[in-house]
Length: 635
Image 1 (tube, rainbow, N blue to C red):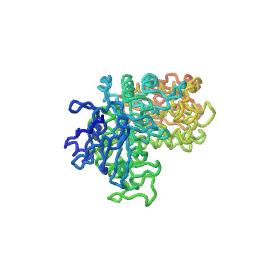
Image 2 (image 1 turned 30 degrees about the vertical axis):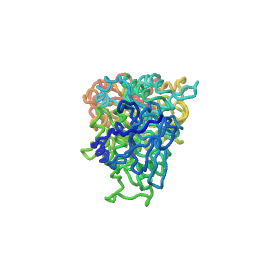
Image 3 (image 1 turned 60 degrees about the vertical axis):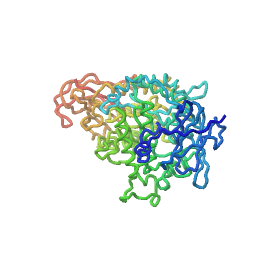
Image 4 (image 1 turned 90 degrees about the vertical axis):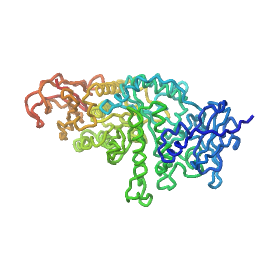
């Protein structure tokens, strides 16, 4: 017997006023499908925002997907919210909203924007689910403020869950449960402090890598259930590793079941295509000036931090949000009210987002993928900044990869490319990214970009990583970088793990394990990584030899390290460097070590002489191996 929809609501008048003001940041507690009990009957309460609808029905496998069997009630307060309690519906039921619009009498079938679980693509229904789970990460969360602090090491392993490692026998990706064992132990072995997942929210189209979302509140069903994803989070936290999620508030796809034209109107997207359509990605752009949309997006960010214990959000494509003329020609965009190109609504939204995140969650970080020189991205909102904790240092990445691509014989003429980053390194809290974007679309793998014979290519790659880990800032490497992939990343296949049978690739892996150890164990490399006080040039102008020499400094003077990089395959013997104090110079890291497949050149402890050099009172003569970074401590 069909059960009628009962009048029921989770919304108070205060909820409605916050929602309409753009200030309700816990909407997932109200909208969506909630398993509950009303008047002694178990069932599910449904709520959806559809202000342009004539009628909204819940259709699902419990009513044979028939429109009108379970019509929702529209609220009387003109909020545009439709809601109701359907007795007898159980966890696991599949459902959608059938929306009959006032606009052109359109009839639409939409997935629930707040669904906690979705069907496995290409199927598109939402699934009634709960978030019941007994967390075991209290110890990690109690220390998270310290772990995630900006004066602590921040070494991120960026990854695409579907292609990290495949079960070759069954031709499938690993499940969340399998990753909780294999992936967590691997990231711990490598020594990374954090892992960053490319979007794990539900997405319909595999080649989008997850950047075109339809299920904002649902971990993708490709790898398991929400609870199994929670187990993966728990396992990382038990191992002391933080988890960052890629989060995409910049655009969304036009898939019929998604947010586009949700109730027959431009509900989530901006109605003006100059602000609401992204020409590069053929996708829709959120209307950041609409209060209810702001509430939806900020609630979504808060949801992952709250319900999944996520430790950070890397916000995708921030530049595309900040500028009205992003990727548009003259005449294709409209200036703001002051005549400028900044998207004032998006800027205000970002500030509200970061204010709420840092106010409500201790020890989390937000990280901006922002590719322009927009000012104060990682400065606090109350000082006029956007409020992010960190920003990707895209300029460093472009200049560095461009420099490394060149044959060493020509590097002397481009020396400024490798030293230039230090002129702006402390204008923001920068993270150095060698991300997935750098190993796709014909750009080649990192190893594939390196010049020279095979030995030189591997030496160059070791030099690149060593330079990166001794440069100020947080670190980010995309999976596969640590084994020296020959091929570009392919989302359809596993990483080339068989390469680790060969010494050069084993060497790259060992090098990165040791670089993570060095970064974590040496205060000079992380305590002041976002401050000019943590860096000092010894020599930046030896273009003839393509050598950089600098000091990295921590809070204590005795923790200082001397870093020397040789960007040519020439061995430099008795090379003089100026030093800040007397004592002995002891080598603590050398990327030319034989265990990394290097030539094995090294420096025995050296006495520092009272001979001035590089405008300093003391100096030492060192041997610099070919295409290598050497790090010394002063004893």
